[in-house]
Image 1 (spheres, helix red, strand yellow):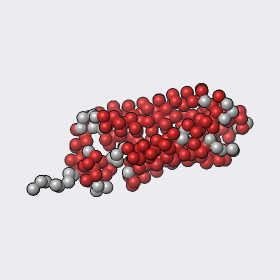
Image 2 (cartoon, rainbow, N blue to C red):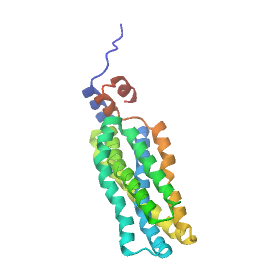
Image 3 (cartoon, one colour):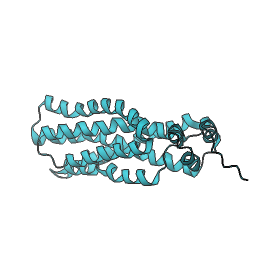
Image 4 (cartoon, rainbow, N blue to C red):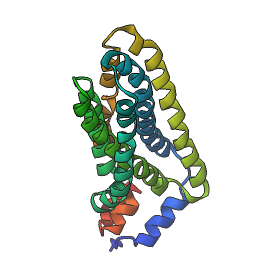
Length: 223
């Protein structure tokens, strides 16, 4: 009779650690890295948008400061909650939900007509961004083979520079193009909401998290 005993959590972790780096690892790294780059794009865009809003809305230094900083307040809270939610509901689920949250909030910012609504939306954007960053890093590290885990995380973080480059291009080409250029820039920032669907349906859950939750058979299939 065939041996149908399920592997242990320890054996699953050992198998993940000794795997060669494959195209599936590369797909996970690229998929997570794109989420990381979209984060950076949003963080970078607000500085270009603020310059346009200051002229159009006649913002005071205090108003501009609040718009710039409230997102970072949201990020601080989101970073605190993100890890707790990822431990409870799974890495992939929270990764996708945070992309969805800040993508929708950024896209909705294109429709605002005053400071109050923009402040609320920028806070929500910060919540999503702050929660997504540590979850993405954890997600990738839990798949990466132990011997190259540090290098994989460095490559993941390099996607941040791509996002800032995209923000600079949008800030140079889109925002000055018309009076509504800043609205189009926010609309482009809604891309993460669409990307969240890809994350949810095409990227696997972390087998380490599944094993920790007792879902050994699912973890084994992914490994």
